[in-house]
Amino acid sequence: MTTSGSPVTLLWGEDAFLLREAALELLGDVRAIEVDAGEWQGTELQDLATPSLFGEPRALLVTDCRSLSKDALGAIGSYLLAPDPESSLVLACTVAERGKPPAALQKLVQPVGEVRQVQVARKEIEPWLVQRAKRAELDLTPPAARALVQTLGEDLGQLAAAVQQLADAFRGQKVTPAQIHQQFRGLGEQKTWDLCDRAFTKDLPGAIRALRSIEENGDEALMVLGGIAVRVRDLLRVRALPDRLAPTQVAREAGLRFEWQARRYQQQARNFTLEELVTIHDRVADADRALKSGAPGDVVMPVLIAAIAA
Image (cartoon, rainbow, N blue to C red; front, side, top):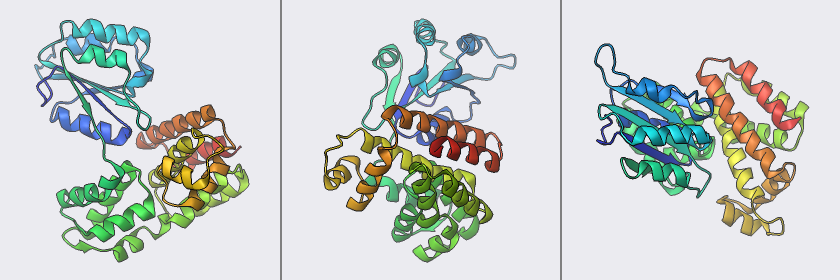
């Protein structure tokens, strides 16, 4: 059973990385079978309820639960009528900004389990980084945390990977903005922003050139993908706003820092329908899974960029 003491836990929030990390922390030492909701086969809960040959605890982690089919929800509902008290079911549901998990899923879980929101607000990202660094025996100063966010963006998975990279390079040392700029100069705003600007303005040749420059510099594909993910989410927020809004209002409503940034994002967002941006967001998630499964970045990234810019 999970450390929460419940046979089922529904974790929900806007960041898939944060949700998966919270799920693994919840499960502790229990090894879980992990299933993407979009690939639900129907036998997962049977496996969960089957006693282990060696008697170890059983656990099932289902990610992207907004993609659960009606049949899958029905199967989960049936299982939760009499859940195995020695097994753990963790459901991770990524939602849009200010979104909520499906009401039907909450209704199934609440009587027998726990529903928990997992999030790090924008104003909490820098303290979150400092605390994460401390656990990795790294003295990350607040100005350095700010520099890291300014350099890499607000994707939590990307930032967590950066903290680990810094811990490997500077463990036991005090890290200042100077070390941040030195360590991540290849992933600075210029290269990442240039790639995103070219891709989302439909400049395919320019986007491919920018990607090749990043690859030649030796930058990690996952880190670059994190920057693209941040841009897609920003464009989704901008595209959902009325076209008539002034850039100052767009910046405020979409949580952007600068008016010029809002103006540029308005222009880029108009190149896509909202549905097309949602599809691109899904393709970014697919690329993330592929890279984490060992697919080479020089194969995955050009395909993604072509899908955006073509």
